[in-house]
Amino acid sequence: MLVHVLLFDSGKESEGIHSIELNGKTIVLMFENQDDAERYCLLLEAQDFPRPTIETIDRVDIEMFCEQSGYECRFVEKGFVPNTDEERLLLVPPENNRDTSSWKNEEGDNSMNKQEEEDTNNSLDEIRKKLEGLL
Image (cartoon, rainbow, N blue to C red; front, side, top):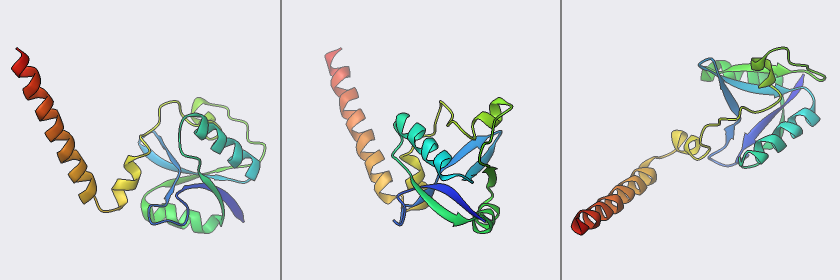
């Protein structure tokens, strides 16, 4: 059975799959209906996320990926109606989202990130010295 998942930077080295955190678990959504996946993409975009790509993938492949990665997957069937707040997150993204810039750095080389952090710290130190000089 084919399902629809949401990918960021599809086909690039920094490719990532959209997931939500729920009760300490990372959940990957698998949509039966492409229209539901499209609507979810639009809702993410409205929350200032980069727009994900909808990829059609065999359900077994996603389930294996999730199992190997320590994730859970949830199937959102066509016509799904949530009964709880938790189930509502399968159709509407949570209001509080993780910073999308950090997921790229988790998988790749962090050397550039460390350099940027060091530069920022140096800039803050310079500002701190100037402020202390004013006192």
